[in-house]
Image 1 (tube, rainbow, N blue to C red):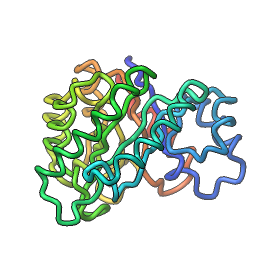
Image 2: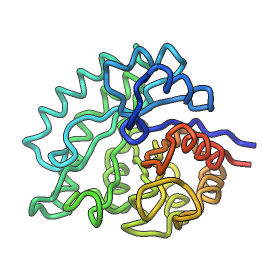
Image 3: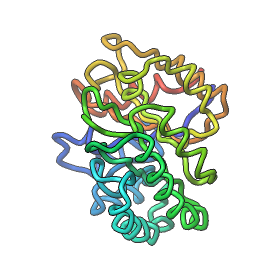
Image 4: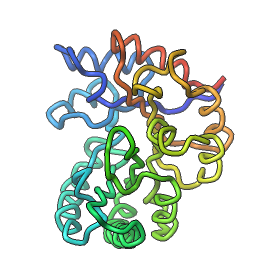
Length: 253
């Protein structure tokens, strides 16, 4: 039985949580090793129970690396987060293309590559991975530019840094492209982080959605993936029970 490192996004599981420390401790007891997008005031509580910060965002989802006028602001925030990497065991820093807003995809790609190249040397020296997130522009994030795997892959290949990778979000790419297993296999060496959710609905990984998560995890395992699998769905019921079921489902047997 292969065991992926698993994490969960705080924003999607924390509704109704009145005791964050207890919730984080319970998630760790399930087997989770990391938490993502956690409010900074809770970072110490995560460390106290043995969780690392598996991912933290940089910049704006809509105003990202695809425009040069955003690069300086993103770089400033990036260097601030780098100061916290060792203390909080931050594994990945998520970056975004930004929305098109009329920008041609090729021009946006080249400017995004420039922005990533500005950040790559410091990421390499600090041992943290920048992950460019794929999001769907059909349902959740209209006009987002990095909405196809081929676009992200070209950017990462051009930067050619071991510390600049793709955040492959299975839910988002199922909406935009489908053909998930073949795609993950083709880009295996450039996946730095993975997010999950059931489609349609961005809810539990259950029988009401169309993705075969055991098969997807088996593909990642065969291709030697060693990063985090991050649960990022909105549970229908109890959050801890949903995390427990998802953890078991994403454990390769």
